[in-house]
Length: 253
Image 1 (cartoon, rainbow, N blue to C red):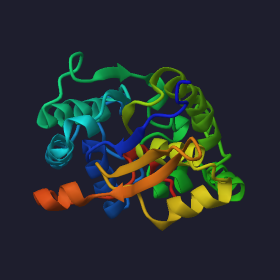
Image 2: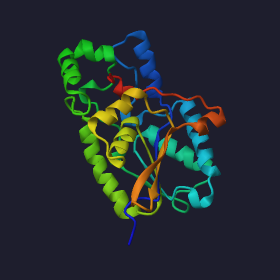
Image 3: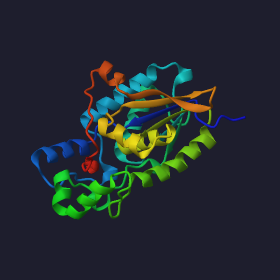
């Protein structure tokens, strides 16, 4: 009988992006808008994000061949796709021959709708009623006009996890995506509830290029947590660790 979960599942946030840097600058200056010239999908890695991605790739490259990824699923957003490309390059893994590479739009960043590119100050100033509603409802269920709630993200990820179980059971699967995706995948895999995942989210942002992983427990046929926000590969390589939220998610309470 085919296993219904991967043998190993790694979930990685992309390296630091130019949007992360712009968000920090806008917040520090008290600006309403985050000065990002690209569409969110096109925001590239920063120089530091490249360094982080290469460091993580070297770590994957040190794993024994029988423990390296066989399947890589990546968000189509440039910062995630660049992280994936650099990681595979540095790990010595070639798409097509060593790993199956799949770009999947269900792993895209949470969509922020009319709140896109606004800082916390900008949201309060431009949309005070939405700011109040979001504070009351909470971000798990709050859907900004034209955007998504965490529940919307989880709904598309349910479809993705079903595909992973159906097509990649028993394999070693690496997912490269975004901060909200990492947390929403944890919600699904660990069978969490709203209170627990928001508690995890409040404790700390997901570091760029941090690894959260699970291994199949043969006794229960379930995925058991292995690593959570693992940053040792960056520390060993001397790559600075960054934990800023994504540029368009500055509304985080």
